[in-house]
Image 1 (cartoon, one colour):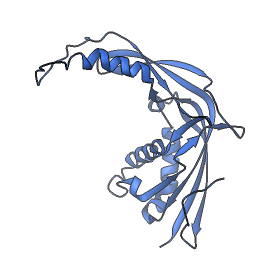
Image 2 (cartoon, helix red, strand yellow; image 1 turned 30 degrees about the vertical axis):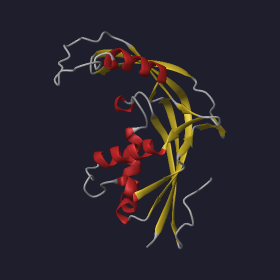
Image 3 (cartoon, rainbow, N blue to C red; image 1 turned 60 degrees about the horizontal axis):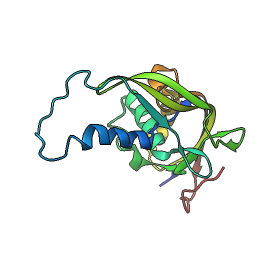
Image 4 (cartoon, helix red, strand yellow; image 1 turned 120 degrees about the horizontal axis):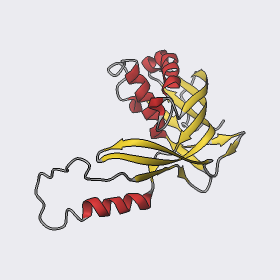
Length: 205
């Protein structure tokens, strides 16, 4: 059975971080949950409207000693959203079983260099389970995102151009649903059918 290698390069504008600040998350859990669950707890707890005042949430990028990165799960999420937009949930269900994303850590680059730090912070209002909140996101104003999709699923391969077109319109990361953030300005790809199956799924390019 044939394998296809799809190399994808995006240029994304105003990409936002999506990981809750660990210190803030821990403090929030301790304040609102751990205290409630000491001792006996009623099985049904009703939270009145506006019980939680407006608060500020911080969302950051993943980072390690190399720099800022996305994880492959974010690419699977992007593909799933494109599949849903095209109404192909049945045809292309369980995309993570059909496609292998490489690498596991997808570093954000600009002019060929891995970004070490975000460009700043953006604040946007969001609706949470307890009402309105302000969300502070780390952001990069422009980033190059490169990854490889490996597949031997013909249905996915045949639909790739549609998925790519819709995916570019959807965008990447938080805030994309309003078109303000995560705009994919460029989406280039090269598709290659392999005569032999890959020895491994690494693809440095």
